[in-house]
Image 1 (tube, rainbow, N blue to C red):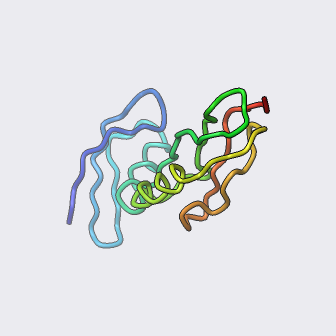
Image 2 (cartoon, rainbow, N blue to C red; image 1 turned 90 degrees about the horizontal axis):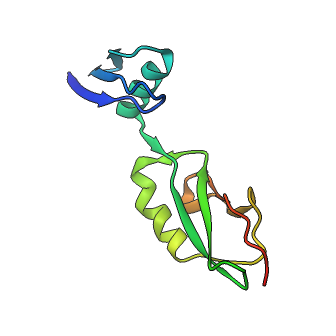
Length: 120
């Protein structure tokens, strides 16, 4: 049996959670809403994150465009995703919501632009 103490990040309350894992059973205490229960269980069994960063843009009015992963990626893939982002360059124009990299680093998630960068 393992017990972890976490702070829920699903809403502004920031509940202090006590999550106990006993084989297949996961118990979450301290949550004030169902989102805390969901967060606690997911965080100890299969943690995920949204990666936000920026990519280089050639021929644009700005040198960078902000991006994020959609949906969240497995936490252990963050460094693989960041390597892929660092090695990628987009050509202007880049549009908000545009899929720049499909299935980034084999995660099943896409890298999507969160800022428009017009062409020079």
